[in-house]
Image (cartoon, rainbow over the protein chains, first blue to last red):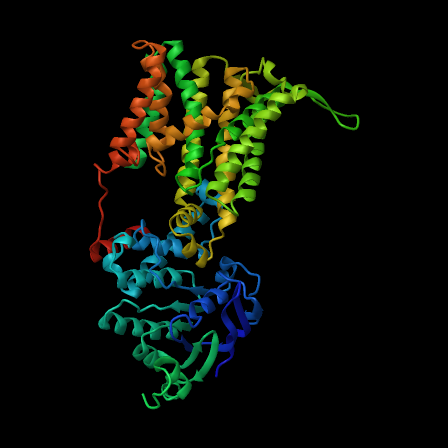
Length: 258
Length: 344
């Protein structure tokens, strides 16, 4: 395995008496595609929220490229290059696709407030650079045709793509995708899998939460299986497919050979 | 196109005193103009971050008092036998201090209340305005309390020895207010169009997503509140030096309500909205006075307000803008063209 990018170390997350995650430890290596799977309520989205700073873990520690993330706010974690997308569609609905991506470029903008107000050349250059990057990114992800439509008016699948484009605009070194293909049809899913591979080829590490098993099996390097807030299995797709604990979690006891 | 409209509007407004000689109407235009600046500052918060400041007049009033006291001088005793004696400074220094102090107050109020936002921000701003009003009313040694600060000198630019200009007449003040309003408009337009403005809009539309791509909520909103309060302070300073007298009534809640009405009817979130709404509701009492009894005027005011909100719920400017749709190039070749044009 490559050098570790993300380390989740003995993390627990309690909401009052409810234990969403009891003890979770896993590592994602640089450039890897790792999937986090498990039945509904297994704690997958909670794990995402802990990693990206939307929740503070009750115990344990998350670190990215050696930096401990505990106590950092979501926007600070984003500035470290760890960027997520959301389970439900999440775009800026009243802005066009193009404007969405320009907003996503926030972290890269170099212009200070004062220089923008005074219209200094530096600010203008930074703005022009943002616009060019936004156009490139939109073409790259295949939304060029939709660039000037309001994001809220697009189809579900297209909005997911906008969400990924906004996240990519924030220049992640690691991207966390929360159920990106749920609600997509087969051909949209197929396109999305290719997109994930292209992202990895750009050097972006990927952690994926997904229910679509064929998709997870085809795209992942490794799979981490959660059930009731605990990791019950971890390994490459072939091993996971035949793991008795996983089969039991998904299909119930008594079925030995799924 | 937008620029041409703005220049035409400023030119038209600049020509008003050439054909309008009535000092009463000119006075109404000046006070309306000052309130339009206040409404523009409120719109920066309400229209572009979605945060409602119901104590916005506090920043206006702080600007007015700071500017007046700076140019009048004061002599106050503090607990422990200290005395602070301030000799009068030029009104322009008062203007600058008014902007700075109001901006600082805006930043602090924002910083304190934006952790919790929404209704909390509304309550904190109302309370802040009331506290400031009570201080102005009761710290008689500094503010003269209900006796008002009087003989405030007119605004003045220049440097001793290098020539000075005093804004003595209504005509002078008209152009002073118009110039300041145009500058504030430009400042807000630039701000809203910048990376910072996009961050504000992103927070209003989808805060979770905005945070996830690295936008700092508290910082963005506090800076917006700071700029907004600073502009309101500038308007307050102009008010003090034009009226030459201010009392704690300047902090009255109705003044904030008037600004909110100007913003909402004109169209919150539209740059020209507060200007249009402000001119309509600032000048309406003047227009209604010759034709109606005072009681009927307020009924008409309310009736017109309801009619506007009923017919154009998003405000006048957005409603009109719908009739002049901007070209919306959705085809891929248009996107490529746009790319070429913008990188040129």
